[in-house]
Length: 322
Image 1 (tube, one colour):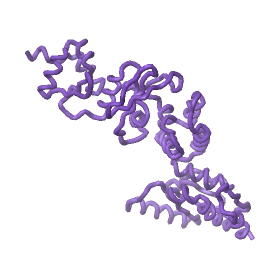
Image 2 (tube, one colour):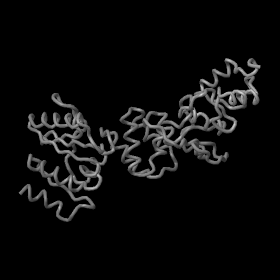
Image 3 (cartoon, helix red, strand yellow):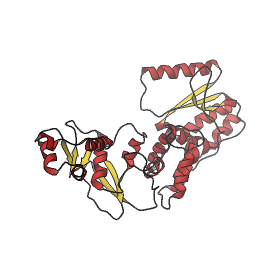
Image 4 (cartoon, helix red, strand yellow):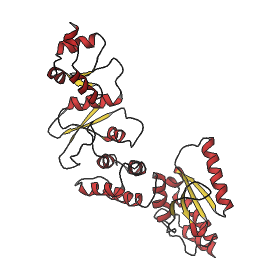
């Protein structure tokens, strides 16, 4: 009896390649029929993980096993997309609860948690599905996730900062798409990503503070002999702008910031610090402070008003310069 229900080495090898998941059809092709699979499940040796799907261990299936199960359930041509693909590409550390499975456009499947099935048309994305667990390319994954401004900022900078792709390759993928929501915004963010900005907050500062108000172009990620890298440096005027996109710092982070600021002060430089709320909600006020320091330190020009600046913004520079 036991010999009849023991899976073959070939079946175990296939299951290992699919993170422990097999279909009943695969098991039958490799000599293990439905009744034998049912016995293994009843004995608690295997677990059911979906329709006609089994997990060949008695443990809780890992997230990747659920992703494989979605691919096998959806059938030929299916691949992982969206936030699930982003996790597989190491663009995010935490796996999403919902696993998006892209399927050929001519096929229909109802969502079945944790799987959400989405039909895709030919030619929208690259036909390549890298990895043993098929998924969209890094570039297509990022572009798919650019659903609004903040999401675009996050995913573009995450992909470039984690060295999973480059702004150039993302732009090439963007140009290949016939349809792309927020195309102009994404194109602009890709230009900014090539300038050396390394976080969504740095991109917002570059666009909404520095560029929008006609400030001089700062150097990004400047390394110092006596301290860590500075986010933005206005070298000629001895001004450093540090941007902190985190909600909070622990004691070690604060001590590191203090040491960096102290080192800058010893070298005769001034440090201004801003968080996400400052830059995203009050970019004109941030610009006004930066302008004041720049002019007091010899910047010969005057700032410009952005479309949302208060009427007296440009007068700030004139008063200081006068």
